[in-house]
Amino acid sequence: MQQLTGKLECVSDTAVAHVYFENGIPKDAQTSTNRGDEAIKELVLWRKGNYLFKQGLRTEMSSVERSLQTVLLEGVALLDQLKHLEKAGLVYESILVQKQKNLGEPELKLMLSKGHPLDFQTQKVIYDALSHKKTFTDLLRDHPMEQTQWAPILFNLLYCGLIEIKAPAATRGGALDFLGEGKQIIQNLGHHFVRPDTGIVSFEALLYFLEYEYYRYEAYNWPLSIIAFEMSLRRPGSAIGETEPLPIQALSSAAMRIGLVKRPLDLLTHFQVNEFAILMPNTKASQAAFVANRILDALTVTPLSPGIDRANISLSFGIANLPSDGEDIESLLQAAEQARLEAREGTFPIVLARTQTTRI
Image (cartoon, rainbow, N blue to C red; front, side):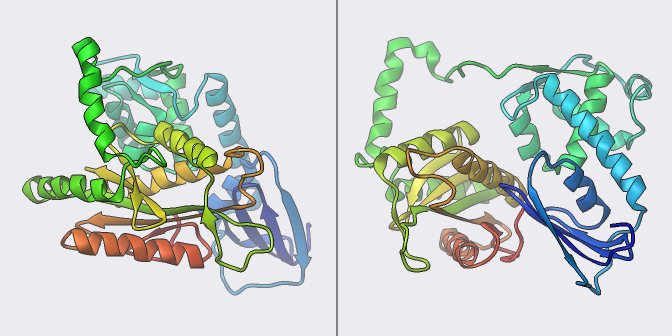
């Protein structure tokens, strides 16, 4: 490819990318989440996929700024950091804990000086965020970052002895465990909000809880997000856009996986007639988008039930937020549904209401 001109197309199980070359020099690169140098760096991190080079194709776009050799070396270094973190046990459910607590800024700078040269303030923000133990998922939800951003920071914090990675908790204690057997009486109240045919909270219950969250938004100006999404089955030979509800076994499996991704305070419910929603109090749109991506991965990584997998599941997510996308509950729900329809008809499975064209 030293002197070739054309387009390199790359496809993995979860993403697509392309790189345009002009006389062997990369000119424009794009993945689902990055463009330019960062996109090439991201491609280095792919563990598997297929590629095709289409000779002679050109573009007027120009996004690659640095030499291919420089970017590839950075990508390889980033891959080594990711492998080190994985070897240390990092998964989305891992618990991240500060190993060195109550450090002043001079001490923190001194310890970080042993690692790779990164922006100190960015590292400090992430270090401070771990003052109370939280999962890796919690960290990325509160501080949305791409893989090319979080990997060097976590590697530095781990390498410099500032954090430790603990295995996921086997079970999570409930806030009302102190009630003992009396806790069951409280839990039984929640059954009135659940549809018996699916085991998922009803749309009417969503509106009930949404009203209270809206009052909190008004009183304290806390952001409020909702994810409206379709989760249905495409039969072989069916018309474009024609789907049917998931069988109950697959739906139960999907609900369980979503429950492992969302926070305990996030509420999975039915939405409108055949859709679903997640109510997310005190959550920005970018944080909700991260959760939507995690749910998308969780629902497609393995079959939900025999014969029901990524090849025949229809998934589309629309995200709306207060105050960004409306002034009241009605406008919030309308914005989420419109974004979901945009996702269903478009290229990207996750759409933010205020952009309606961008996958996060």
